[in-house]
Image (cartoon, rainbow, N blue to C red; front, top):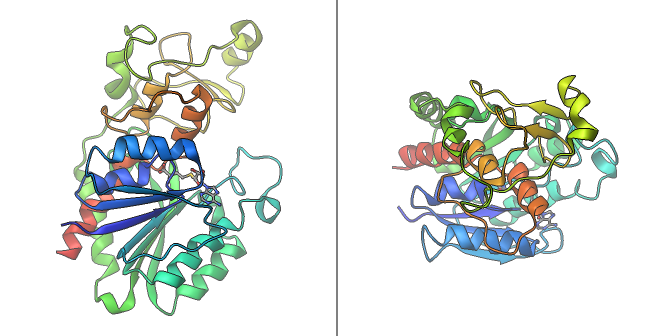
Amino acid sequence: MELKVLDLFCGMGGFSLGFAMEGFIVIGVDKSRNVAKTYLYNLKKYNEKNEFIKKDLNKEIIKTDAPIIIGSPPCKPWSPLNTRRKGASHQDYICINAYFNHILANKPLIFIFENVPQIENDPILKKNLQKISQDYDYVIRNIRYSDYGAPTKRKRLFIFAFRKDLGLNLQEFLKELDEIGQKMPKKLVKDVIGHLVDVPEGKIKDHEWHKINFEKYGEKIKKKLYGCERIKWDDFFPSKGNLQKVLTLHPLLDRSLSIKENLLLMGFPNSYEFPEGLSKWGRYQMIADAVSPTFSNVIAKALKKVLK
Ligand SMILES: C[S@@+](CC[C@H](N)C(=O)[O-])C[C@H]1O[C@@H](n2cnc3c(N)ncnc32)[C@H](O)[C@@H]1O
């Protein structure tokens, strides 16, 4: 099935990736040059037709014939890690309107929206949902990625919406989603990064890490102060955000998690790599922003079943 999917605010392509793996054609849109390189470098491996459009989505509406629109507008206005310029006072607040203006302009058959759970009661979301409610049946779900086979227990809010004239049952889709999720093998931290314990830094692509000043942070780490935490070997990955803000230590070694380990813990496949020339912080940040492709792959699988 070569159905097209438009991914708004696509970042490094975590959301797109799960769809590309199931044979959907993905078109990512983002304003950042760094994500453009990363997105194309990885998504083209699945299909030459996968594309990237560099645009500021607050300034322009992309017209598309894609029957499915997905997307994750920036979550900084609601993120617990952001302690300044919250909500409407944040410059990215209006990106929510940009996402829904694309839905209103294109009227896709299906749309899926992702963000942090804290957005749920914000008036900007409620107002936009009211605008689409005439044409769409939708459901809001808080998803824990580890319930769907990902190694991370990060929680995110998803809105799944079907156009009313599509004649598809949203409940049937949700049932498929949960059934596929339940069948996914459970993966813990040790299962996905265990093989990297003895691998020296730089030996494989993206296996490099931020150097921690133990003289400065050693005491804080021992006392488990917020922002300094050793992750557990036998548990799911807590994934609190960018390493620059939350110092997350390797479960067994006195170092931070490598970029490669972060990728695997978020559910990216081993084949996902960053192109040359990107900064360490830039790469850590893109992963912190991403949808787990393990979960987006479950979505794509469930959609394929109900669209048959
Ligand atoms: C939460 S991240 C998206 C992560 C992505 N869904 C993934 O799974 O990898 C938000 C993205 O929105 C982009 N962005 C922010 N403002 C934008 C704008 N006005 N127009 C287009 N892209 C924008 C950022 O560059 C960032 O990559």
